Length: 196
DNA sequence: ATTAAGATTTACT
DNA sequence: GTAAATCTTAATG
Image (cartoon, rainbow, N blue to C red; front, side, top):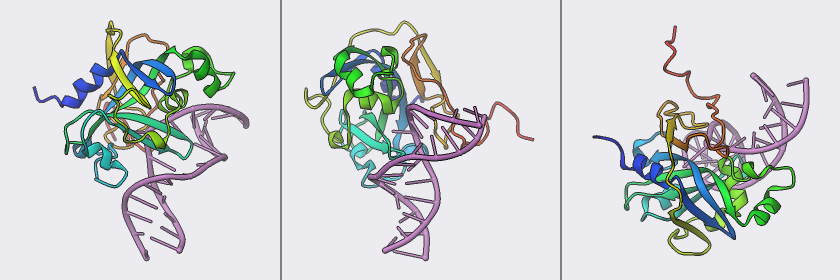
């Protein structure tokens, strides 16, 4: 009953199309971030960087990760709530050649958009796309649900050092494009094991 | 002005 | 399994 709307929003994104700079993926893995309620969210504190998430929904939030990668998020909440969904993986269904070109020759097709940094690279998403309206066709567009996932799995989010046990990551069960789970080395030990 | 940390990925022991 | 690469943002002096 008291489930956060962003969790439903995240699940609803699975199977939807995301089009970036000539490449289309069907989203297979996402993570929900619950704004000021969520210590793991960049919007936990409002800063110039996270300001876009406090604005209207269906805008693109992009951040640079470890100086090397870009990560793409969909703002899902009304103004002021700052909920967003990180798009972590997808299956390339259009613009395969372009995606292969961007990701390099050694990457298998199934891995072209596996992991948030890799997905952003395949779609050509950079900081320049931050704040764009995803309902517009250019430069990045969020399309309809193309495939209804047969089964959706849930688990803890990858790499977060805070709220590391909240099962707010969702993925299409059995899909080979989904990235592997890795717990943050900075996160406290899992709560399932009793500390001694 | 300076510094520390990070929603990652890849390579290597 | 661990470590390194790399730079933007935010926190601190």
